[in-house]
Image (cartoon, rainbow, N blue to C red; front, side, top):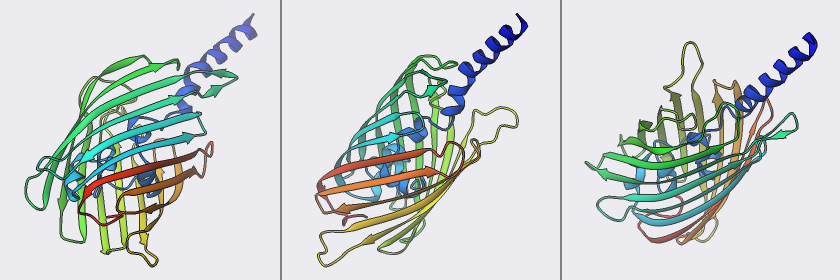
Length: 305
C-alpha cells in the first residue's frame, strides 16, 4: 500500500511539474520571434524594423520608410511546437504602425502522455519619431490561451507594450522596451523589460547586444536572457540583390542554457527570404528551425537596411 501511494505521488508530481520544466523558456516573448531575431541571439531591440519591431520594439519602425508584409513558420523540436506569424507594417507615413498575428501550437510528450497548448495573439503597434533621434512606440495585443498542461489555466485578454529607440549617432542605436506592462495576467505573457544596443561600424556590418529580464519572478529565482550577434550583408555583382549572413549566441540564466544560432537569406528591393536555426548546447539540446518571407511595397531603404 505504501509503495503504491509513493508511486502515485511521484507520478502526480511528474505530470504536474515536468511539462512546466520542459517548456519553461517558451513564452510569448520568445515564441513570436522571426528568423532574423533568432539568428542574432534575439538581439535586435536597438534596431528592430518591420515585423521585428512588432516582436521586439515597436519604437523601431521609424528607422526605415517602407511598406512590408511578412509571413513565417518555425518548428521547435523540444515540445513539437509549430510557430506561425504574419505582419503588415507601414512606416512611410507620419505615424508608422503594424498589424500582427502569431500562433503557437505545441504538443510536448511527457512520460508517454501528450498535452496540447495553443496560443493565438493578434494586435497592432503605433510609433512616432518625436525628434530625428528619439522614437517612441506602443503595442496593444489580444491573446487567447488554451492549454492541457498541468498547472496552466486557459486565459485571454489584452496587454500593452511600450518602447523607446534612441539614435545616438549614425553608427549606434539604443532601444528600451517594456512588455505586458498593463492588462490581463498570464504565465505565457510575463511582465518584462529589455534593452539593446545596435552598432553599424560599416554599412554592410551590424553588431547587436541585448538583455531581457522578467519582472514577475519571486524570491531568488534567476532571470535574464543575454544575447548578441553579427549580421553581414554580402553583395556580389548586382547591387539589387544581397545575401545577409547572421550568427549569434544567447544565454538564459532561468533555464541555465546556452544557445548558438545562425541564419542566411536573400534580399531584393521587392522580396526577401530568411532562414535560421538555433540549438541549445546543454539540457535537452533544443532545436528550433524557422523561416520567413517578406514582400515590400514602396520603400526608401536599401535591401537589408
